[in-house]
Amino acid sequence: MRTIEMQNGIVKMIDQRKLPHAVEIVECRDYRAVAHAIKDMTIRGAPAIGAAAAFGLALAARESDATTREEFLLDLDNAAKILRATRPTAVNLMWALDRMLKFARTQNAGVNNLRDALAAEAQRIADEDVETNRKMAQFGASLIDDGDTIIHHCNTGPLATVDIGTALGCIIEAHRQGKKIHVLVDETRPRLQGARLTTWELQQYGVPMTLIADNASGYYLRKGLAQKCFVGADRVAANGDVANKIGTYKLAVVAKENGAPFYAVMPTTTIDMTLENGDQIPIEERDAREVTHIEGVAIAPDGVRVGNPAFDVTPNKYITALVTERGIVRTPFKKNLLRMMDAASG
Ligand code: MRU
Picture 1 (cartoon, rainbow, N blue to C red):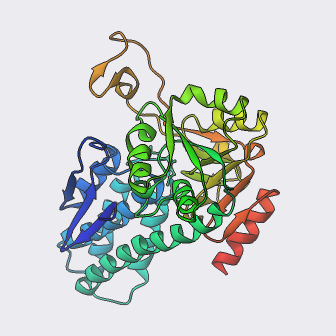
Picture 2 (cartoon, rainbow, N blue to C red; picture 1 turned 180 degrees about the vertical axis):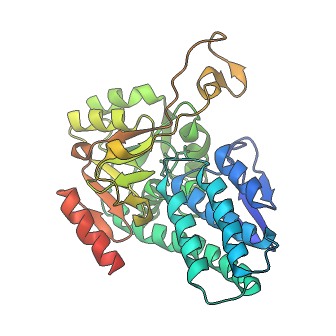
C-alpha cells in the first residue's frame, strides 16, 4: 500500500515507529487521531505529513455536524489549527492545509457536497505527490553516474512521501536504470530514520548499501570512498537555504570540503518563497527522551540536560543543486528559484 490512504472515511497509514521490526497499519477515524499520528511520527517526512494533514481535514469535514456553510468553514478552521500545530518545520503541512481551506472557501457548494469535495481534493493532493516524485526521480537520477557511492541522510524514500520518495526516489530510479551504485546510509540519530527505514526500503528495491554511523561520513568523504550526497528537505527558503533533518548541515560542510557535490531533492511544495533565508525557518525542538533513550532503554544518566533540535539549516553555499519536479535549479538560487516558482504559478 501507499504510505497513507483514505478509504471509506478511514485514514490508514503505515506505522513508521514500528519498522523495520513489524509492518503495522494505523487507522485514524477522526482528525485528532491524524494530528496525533503526525506529532508522534507514526507518519513523518515532509510530503507524507502534508498528505496526512489534507486527509485529516477531509475527516474534520465529515465529523462536522454544521448545517450552514459558515459554521462548517469555522469547524474546518479550528481543525486546521490543531493539525497545523503538530510539527512546525515541514512547510508541506501548512501548504496542504492552506490549499484545502482555500478550496473549501472557493467552492460554490452546500455543506454535504463540500464534505465529498474535500475528500476528493485530499486524494488529489496525495495523487499529485506521487506524480511529482516520479518526475523528480528522473531529474535526480540524471545526476547519478555509474559507479557512484552516494551518502544519504535521514529517510526520503517512499515512506517519507505518499509513494516513490524524494532523494531516495532518485537513487532507487538510478538503480532501476541499471547504474551500478552504492549507498552509504547515515543512521540518523536520534530517531534512526536511516537505520530503521532507509535500509528497509533499499533492501526491498535491492539497492546495494552499507549502513554507517552519522559520524562516519567524514571518513568516507575524505578517503574518496563517496562521490556524492543526496538529501531531502523540509523547507527551502527563497535564497535556496535548506532546512532538513539534523546533521544535514554537518554533512554538507564536509562534502564541500572534500569536493563532493551535495544535492537536495524536494517538490516545489517544500519551497517557501515567503522566507528570505533559512534563518527564518522555525526549527522543531523535540522531546529529550529521543536522545536519552534508544528503543525505550536509557543510554544517559537520569536528569541530564538535553538539546534536541530535529532539523538544521544548510546555507545555500554548500548546495550544488536543488532537484524539483520542474527541473534542476543551480546558482544563483535566489534568481533561479524565483523564475521557476513564478513560472509554476503563472
Ligand atoms: O523528522 P522527520 O523524519 O519527519 O524528518 C524527515 C526529513 O528530514 C526528510 O529528510 C524530509 O522530510 C524530506 S523527505 C521527503
